[in-house]
Length: 250
Image (cartoon, rainbow, N blue to C red; front, side):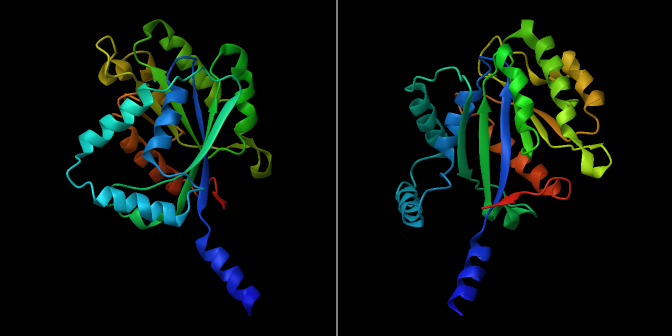
């Protein structure tokens, strides 16, 4: 009886885990994105008691506005020394939705495991090793680096057409996963705005990634602008894509 109860409890408390690759050219802001996500969401390893303590502290700070919270995480991040990734960084967070949607109940038991992979040209050939086990991709674009837009476009097309997506068990069909493209550094005056990006070189992605669930959104990773909204979109698409790519259960 004890073993049955233990088994039922374990099954009930399991969380869906989705593996997300953070890709992009070097210096686009991938590691900064990961570090900010770690500040915004609880770690999957955090205990319930710590979580309750954190919630209590938040309730006791009702005067603190959302804008002040964002500034706080940005200030913490600006005080860190973030080095370029050589190899990979990983972290797993408990996703928490801030939106009331039809899928809100499904958002309650989701972990996101992020893999931040180095973006230097010499390291990009290793990305495909992770495609089989990933459920979604976040591709970060430096919207101030106009000279590398074409390189971003070509890199995205290479990702979408990589042979690693071919599912031999499904008669050689391609496995499609959501691709969230983030136009980073939108807080800077020299940044190219979203409309110009969509009507420029990235307009080709609309037709060439037609079979893939993709979205281009504006963000400032450092200033925490658009991060939670972007993850809301991605998690929604991961849920809809379950039949194509089942989550792991942890």
